[in-house]
Structures are given as structure tokens and as C-alpha cells.
Amino acid sequence: MLPSASLLESFQTSQISFMLVIYLLAITAEAMSGALAAGRRNMDVFGVTVIAFVTALGGGTIRDMVLGHFPIGWTQHPEYVYLVIAAGLLTTVVARFMHHLKQLFLWLDALGLIAFSLIGCSVALELDYPTVVVVMSGMITGISGGILRDVLCNQVPVVFRRELYASVSMAVCLLFLALRAWDVEHNLSTAVCFVGGLALRLAAIRWHWRLPVFSYQQRWE
Image 1 (cartoon, helix red, strand yellow):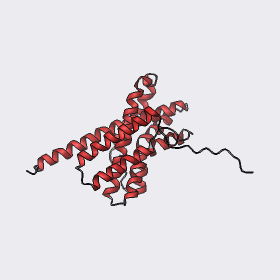
Image 2: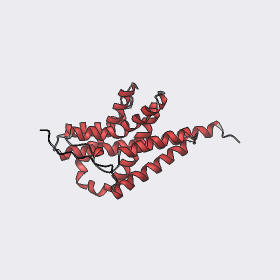
Image 3: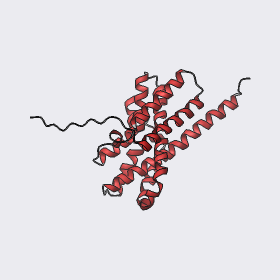
Image 4: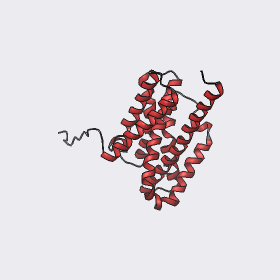
């Protein structure tokens, strides 16, 4: 028996609602991480706001500009801007208590990385870009905010020197495309990507998995 149209619509609505909740949690957590990074550099309130904004929404902005996907997402949803600015400013007040929430932030950051990667893939697929561009779109969305944060704070980006992060984004994108090619039901494939990506990211943190490091110290004569 085929599912009714209303049942299909309810499945699609539940998936959209789930992704939206994860997205909102992710941009909130990223905004707070950006504010903390700004605080470590002794920035003023304006600096905190800017760093919070680019950390949370910078990845999607860069993706849309690269893909020619206009208008840029947050320009059509100003509530996202209000949310990340509020989260950044709130962080300046509660920063002294943030160390108690470290594990929660790790989970939210991992969920956000996966959600951003899947959203980036979906946007590129809707625009009919080839596979390699779809994967790059997912990775750009997932990691660019953190790269912008670290560059503006005059640091080597964390994604290039610690546990697997960008690699997790790439793995999630490839898994998402593979499941799509195998005609796996969309809700199921999304769930598999979240479980697999979260497990890989948390395992990388737990056992300090990372890519080989290239170190070159010799000076040119």
C-alpha cells in the first residue's frame, strides 16, 4: 500500500523541522564559540559581534557566493542574524561558566558540522552542480565559519591542525551522495549521515585521530 500524500508531507515536514532545529542550535553554538575566541583576543563588544556572526553564518555565505546562489540565506531570514548576535553578546556575560558546558559544545559542534555539510550538499544538488562541487559545497558550508573565525583572530585555523574535522565533513558528504545514488529513502539517509558523522567526529576527539602532519623547518639559502 502506497503512503498517502498527507503522510508523505508529514515526513517531509518532520525532516525539515529536525534540520531547522539542528541548524539553529548549530549557529547558536558557533556564535558562542566565535565570541569566546574574540574574548581570548581581548576584543571589544563590536569585535565579539563580528566574530560571532562570521563564525555562525560565514560558511553559508561563502557557499552561496561561490555557487551563485542568491539571495544569500540570512538576508532572507534576519532572525538568524538576531540569534547569532544575541548568542555572542550573551557569551560575554556567561563566559565564566562556559567550561562546565564543554561536552555539550562538542556535541553541538559535531551536529552542526554534519548539518552544515548536508545543507551545503543539498544546495549544490538543487543547482545541478557536478559531484565534486557538491562535496566542496558541503565542506565549505561546514568548515568555512571556523576558518574565518581563526583567521580574524590571527590563529592557524583549528580545522588544519587538530582532530579530524574537515575530513568528517567530507566523509558525511560522500556518504550522503552514496546513499542518494543507492536510492535510500531520504529520511533514513539523513539519519545514517548524522549517526555516522557524529560517531566519527566523537571518536576522533576521544582517540585524537588526525591526518599526518607536514613539518618543514629548513631555510632557503
